[in-house]
Amino acid sequence: MGNMIIGLVFALIGLVIGYVVVSAKMKSAKDTAELTLLNAEQEAVNARSKAEAEAEHIRTTAERESKAHKKELLLEAKEEARKYREEIEKEFKSERQELKQMETRLTERASSLDRKDENLASKEKMLDSKEQSLTDKSRHIDEREEQVSQLELKKTEELEKVASLTQDEARNIILSDTEKKLTHEIASRIKEADREVKDRVDKNAKNLLAQAMQRLAGDYVTEQTITSVHLPDDNMKGRIIGREGRNIRTLESLTGIDIIIDDTPEVVVLSGFDPIRREIARMTLEALIQDGRIHPARIEELVEKNRLEMDNRIREYGEAAAFEIGAPNLHPDLIKLMGRLQFRTSYGQNVLRHSVEVGKLAGLLASELGENVDLARRAGFLHDMGKAIDREVEGSHVEIGTEFARKYKEHPIVVNTIASHHGDVEAESVIAVLVATADALSSARPGARNESMENYIKRLRDLEEIATSFEGVQNSFALQAGREIRIMVQPQKISDDQVTILAHDVREKIENNLDYPGNIKVTVIRELRAVDYAK
Image 1 (cartoon, rainbow, N blue to C red):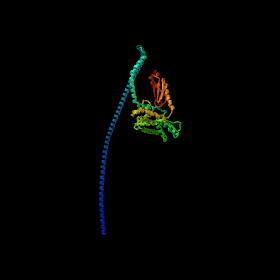
Image 2: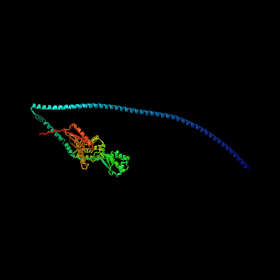
Image 3: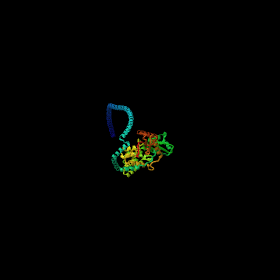
Image 4: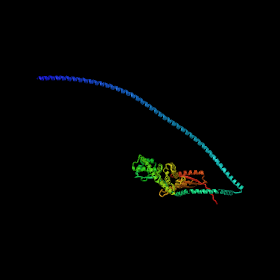
């Protein structure tokens, strides 16, 4: 029992001690918490003050930087405005200077025109005075000629009286003495001429042989200027025309070819003088028919595509022909020019194949005569190259081809061959004559060209009738398949000055009354012959 009481007492004492200890710890913890709270509040106040100070510093700095940036932008804007103003002023100054110079030039030109006008007026007055002077002189010369004739007649009568010889007797004496003096000189000249003939006999023989081979002519007919395109059905004609004709107008404007749609079933005709444009139009139309999409945008696309394709084909045709003839070193421009001849026909004959054929024939003839074969083949191949652009450039194909040959520094014999192969100028070499011969042979061989003699003969007859319709014309001859008309006039009726006027009048009448390809050369010949007979 006592032990229990003692245990209880100790338990109570332990409880009291534990309570006291726990209360002390709790009070210490509370004090620590309050101190920590006070420290946290103080730190928060300090942090807030610091943040406000930093914010104020940042705001102040930003305002200062903003002001400085505004000033910089303002200065840059002012500088750009100044530069722009200077550029504008410089442009205005330049334009004012140009206008001033133009005004000065116009003023000088006006002054120059005034001076030219005054010079022309003075020259006109001078020409009038000279014309009047020439008229007076002509009349005076006629009077003097009549006086001289009378004086010569009187002189002859007086000489006959003094010499007691007639005029015929005096002439015979003088001629006899002159003949004796000139006999030796005549004999020397004859011997010199014989030596010259012997020295040139080989060359003359070659020329005679070449000229003999040249005596061959070919028939000439009208060139082909249309191409037909077959359609799958007649409904395709309406699609080609398009709404309100927009498709056909687009195709005609882009190709430069007339498209003829008539009552002929399932056929459209392309008409135009340029064979390359006609070929591009044919390729485009066939592609449109095959594709089925026919509208202006598609037409423009195909025309451009076929134009590029045509350039490639032209170059390939020219290269193949040059390789075939043995002239691969031709200038690229000449190769392209020759390739264009694939699409050109001359009186129904393909001009490129004709050129190759002429080159080969000229080479064969040159080998028989011992001339330069390569040069003959080259000259024959290039002789008609002017026909590639004779519809685009003014002048005949001979003149155009000669100019191109000189431009690309071809051999002088080649240049002369091109210029002389139709007789426009004189041939200066045997090769030139050989090429003219080969040209005639290629044109005249069976099947080379279509035969339409009626149109050809009618054109020649019309040319000659126009020439003979003028007064004073004795004869007229149409030559070179109607490319030249030669007119022989009566010298008693047509003077030298009137010859030029007649040629001009004939040219104008031909232009107004005939339709013909290329150019026609009008040549008027006035010849006065004195004939006497020895009895």
